[in-house]
Each structure stands twice: as C-alpha cells, then as structure tokens.
Image 1 (tube, rainbow, N blue to C red):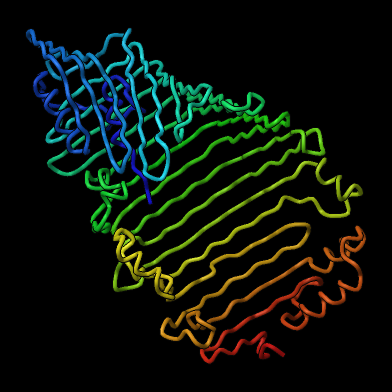
Image 2: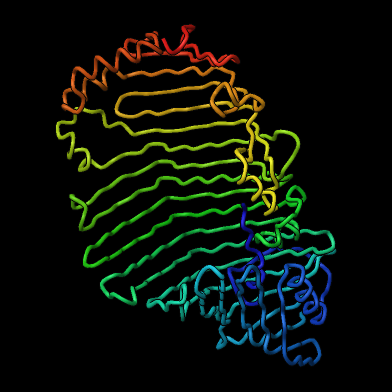
Length: 515
C-alpha cells in the first residue's frame, strides 16, 4: 500500500517543521492578508487530519505574531507533535511571508504506545536559520513556497520498546526549495521538494554492551520529489482510516529522484566487524493509486558494493550492477471482474570482483561475462475479500480459499544469462477457478510456454573441468533434457514447447508427460 506522507510535509511550510513542501512554480495570484493566511493554514491542517493549537495572537497593521503553536497528529496508538513556538506573518501587498526566530528550533516528539510492545519515544529538534515560507493564493488554492539554505533534523532522545538507546541521528539538507498547493474546495493537493544535497548520520550503541555498535552515513545529491493526490487519499493511509473504505475512490501519484548516492556502514558485534560501502549514480521511484489499482516502479543505476569484515575470507569483496529495476501493478479493490496485474524485475550487468572468482575458478575456466536476469509477467486477478475489511479478511483465514483468483497469466519475458549459458521463456495460460481437482487444489491451467537454452553443453564441460560436476552426472542431465527438449538451430541449443491441456495432460514437444 502506498504510504503518503504529506501530513508531515505540510509542517515544512512552517519554516521547515518537517521535510518541506512546495507547490508549483510561482505565478501571479491574488493578494492575501495575514488573517487569511493564518486561517488558510488552520484549514489545511484540519483537512489533513491534524490538530493545530496556539497561544496569544498579536497583530499590528500587516504583521501578526502567533505564539505557542503546536501541531499534532495521532493514529493507531501513535502520535507526533511539533512545537513550532513563535511564528510571524507579514503582509507584502500580494502575499504573506512566514518567519520564525533563528534562535528557535522546532521540537518534535514521536510516541508509539502499542498494546503488543513497550512504548517508543523519539525526541528531537529541527533548525533552519533563515528559512522562510511565502503564502499566496491563486483562484481556490493556497500556495506555500519554502526555501532555506540549510535544514538540520537532530534526534536528542531515543527510546525503542521501552529501552533507551545510546547514539545519535542527524539529517541535514542543503539548498532546499519546497512547496505545496492546497485546494480544499476542489479536493486537490500538490507537493514538490528539491535539495542540492542530503546527508544522514546514524551512530547507535548497544546500551548493554559497548562492543556492539552500528554507524551508518549516507549522502544523496540532487534529490527531488513530487506528490499529488486528493485529500481523501492523503488522510486515509492508516489501517484504521482505511477500514471499510472504498479504495477505488482514492487517487494520488508520487515521483522521487536521487542523484549520486553513497552509504557507508560499519557494524561491530562482540569484537567482530563488518564494513560495507554502497554507491549508485542515481535512482528513481514512481507510483500511483488510481481506480483501486496501485502501481510502483523503482530503478537504480550503476550500483556498486564493497564489503569487508572479520568473517569474510578476503580483504575485500566487490561487485557492481548496471541496473536494478522493479515494477508492479496490482488491484487493491474488491471487484466482481478480474483486473489487470503485472510484475517486472530486472537485474542487468552484474559483475563480480576477480578476487571472488579466484576462490573457485583460479584458472578462469568459466566465462566471466556480466550476469543478466529479468522477468516480466502480466495477467488478471480478482480479490475475493475486501483488503480493508478486517472481518472479511479474518473469515478467509478459516477457509481453504486463498482470497485471490487468477484468470490468466502471460510470461512476457523470462531471461537468465550467466556463465556462458542463456535461458529464455515465454508463453501464456488461462486458469479455470471452478476446477480445483485436476491439479490437486490449484485452478486448472491451459496454455503453452516456449523455452530456449543455449550454451548448456559448454557450461557442463567447464564445470566438469573444474570437477564441480562429475562426468556421469553430465550424461544424466543431458538425458533428462533430451526427454523434454530437442536440439535447436545452433550447435549448443535446446528448445522446448510445454503445453498444458484442459484435461490435465502435459505435452512436451507434442509428447505426453510423464513418459
């Protein structure tokens, strides 16, 4: 389920209370007074399911100063509170500028009091000297534009499951431009955020054993984010709020982009150590919720891993990957008809360091070409129960029905290329959900899949040379393959067509299985 976070980002409009929020590029609008700006802020927080309280309000001409501002949200036994303290609103003639004293940070407290665990408390402070927000109006929307040269989030106290932890957590962002456009009357919410750099430091120590610790540092360049949706979607992302809701009525999208990224991890455990360095040239993550279907796509480019440690038999282990991608589309709403769904995974250009190869192949017998793997499967599915109705989901547990049905599936691509061999497959099937006897409780399939395998004989010869695969097993493997496959056009190629018939019979190249 997509977890939207704009409730917290609206806090960013108050001088950066949380990871900020920007609306669209500035455009000429209508003039706004401090009273209108203050009321709009209260309305927007209320529309997002948050509570905002304040103390005294002093107004002199076009300047309003509000003290003791507290913004909070509670859901499912958890709550988060921001102590904004003092906020000054100043009219400019066309819009209103929000500022806070540079000496004041924004304190925050997160609490979780689940019945299944001990309480968790996180306290911290957000600082952004010189940060400011411009509030303006355009037609029916209120716009908030925030910028700051630097923002720091520091955790000052951390207690997890009732136990106080030692350590530090700091998040710093530089060159921040963010904004938010809130149009309550038309049920539209838009948010953007960009930062030249982001850096994080996490340094934790075991309170019972000082020899156990973990230190993580991460840096991200050229970060940007866009989120849009309707207020219903932004509000109803907690399990309690989603209970019995019509998910097909919600809509929203998100897009996150990361530039050069690096993470360094150092872990010690009873004197043993592990060090990892992970880097990537960039990454993208996009997703949407519309018409009861959630879609998600993630892509990481030019990733690299370097690892060393007490239990690693080499000074270093290195690997790199040109592409790692994942995508999915899945209906979430309970419907009478089957709905499209798909899954895509891509792992491209995996290269392993020569030092690792030398452990089991010092003579370079095996080809060391980059490894590629990809799968692309689509089909149609139908939920038999409402995922957001607890009673319906519990009732499915007491039955043999899995709660979801598949009517058809297509293998658009299945590829594995490694060690000089390459396997591909494709095909499609339909499923008879009324027939669960022919295949022992599974819906009866009908369809065909075509497969191709090249380079297998060469690979087995090399494995035999390495004494990994005994010669007698090579004969057995070739015999088994010969039962379900036939030679292809190439000198080292096998092809096969597997067909499943409605009566339960399986044919391999027209010959029934089992033989």
